[in-house]
Structure formats: structure tokens, C-alpha cells
Length: 196
Ligand code: IMP
Image (cartoon, rainbow, N blue to C red; front, side):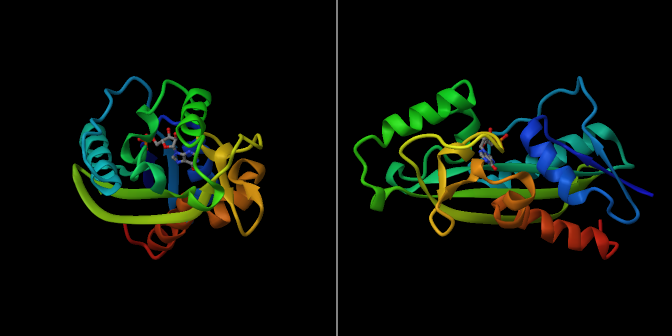
């Protein structure tokens, strides 16, 4: 059995990643052990930060396990791409982040509220990145938070085709269409074909 450590401390991400990778033939999917130092996230792109985290934790965990790291966030066109790679540092908690975002967009019309979620994944072993991918999902920013599923910016991320926010979708439905779900499907295919 090969080992795959999910290198994130974000509980929302862990739930979505484990839901897609669970039961993968030949792989034991494990959480990041607690008490490890945090990887630095000073890259200027999602891919750079996912790679940094995967490299760092795979070096820290030694030569055996594979490590997958996720760097993701919300890119808002009316804010020139912010909060982007700084999505988790935009404000201290999810509620404050969503409130700040809605405040910044207060005077922006529905037609100008386009945004996307982006997810970069990196797979590494023994300090070396072997594979990366990046996927996104398009949407718009709602005028108020709606929904209780998911995490982070999900309540303010509206999927125009569905007329619902991401937080109105149960986990399976979110994983079928989301930036992370799409990225994880390509990872799953790679791992299933025997590739680390
Ligand atoms: P980081 O990848 O640890 O830098 O943090 C990403 C941040 O982006 C999270 O803390 C969330 O605020 C936001 N984010 C990433 N993915 C999602 C998602 O699927 N839904 C809602 N917010 C997300």
C-alpha cells in the first residue's frame, strides 16, 4: 500500500479531498500529523504555493509518503484579482472575509461581479514535486451570503447556471463542479494509473 498524506490543516479542504480520494485502490490516504511547522506561502501564484507546501511537507515527513498540497483562493475581476493568493489572509475568519468582500463590492453591479475559484494541487515525495495541476470554476459574487455547506467564500460565490451559491450545494455536488473537485479528479486518475 502506498501512502498519501493530505498536507493541509484547513478542515474544509481536508473533507473535500478525502471524499474524492477515499477508497483509492492501492493507496492509504492520511491526514497531516499534528504539530509540524507551517510551510511558507510566499509565492505569487497558486501553483508556486502548492509546490512549496508539497515540497516542504514531503521533506519534513521523510522519504516514504507521497504528499499532496492544495493552494487555492478566490479571484475577483472587479478587485483586479484580489484576494487571490492572499485569500486566507484577507481578513481573520470566514465571516469577516465575506463581509469585507461584500463591502468592497457594495457599489459594483451584478454584471461586473465576475469571479473564479482556483485550486492548484502539487504532488511531491522526498522534497521533490512530481506533478501539479490547476483548475478553476467561474461564478459571480452574490450580494449577501447564502447557504451553510462548504467553507470559506462558498456562501458568496454564486454559480449563475444553477442560480445557487456554492454553499447551497452538498459536498458531492460541489466536488462534481468545483475547482478542487476538478483538480482532484485529475489527481485521482494519476494515482489510479499507478503514478505517484
Ligand atoms: P490557502 O490555500 O491555505 O492559502 O487558503 C485558501 C483560502 O481560499 C481559504 O482559506 C478560503 O478562504 C479560500 N478558499 C479556497 N478554496 C475554497 C473553496 O472551495 N470554497 C471557499 N473558499 C475557498
